[in-house]
Length: 79
Image 1 (spheres, rainbow, N blue to C red):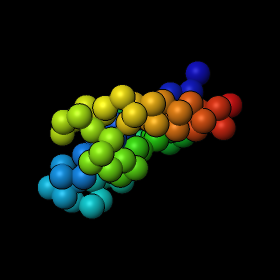
Image 2: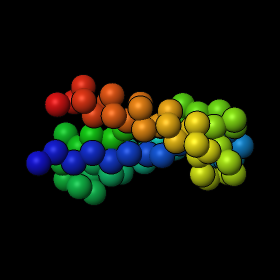
Image 3: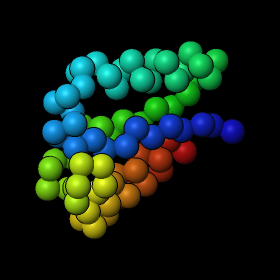
Image 4: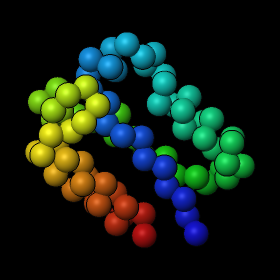
């Protein structure tokens, strides 16, 4: 079985507070912890704008639809 970890969308305001390398560090640490160098990490952290969120951590309906579509397409490409 293949394991896919999804890094969820992050509001632009929160992205400004974190180091720009956080997604790469996160993915690298997950791969090391899992002992699976082929672990798939899909990052959506920087693909959404403030208008896609209802608050700082939850996507609104349009943002959720956008995320679902993007994730579905990316998973389909992996199979």
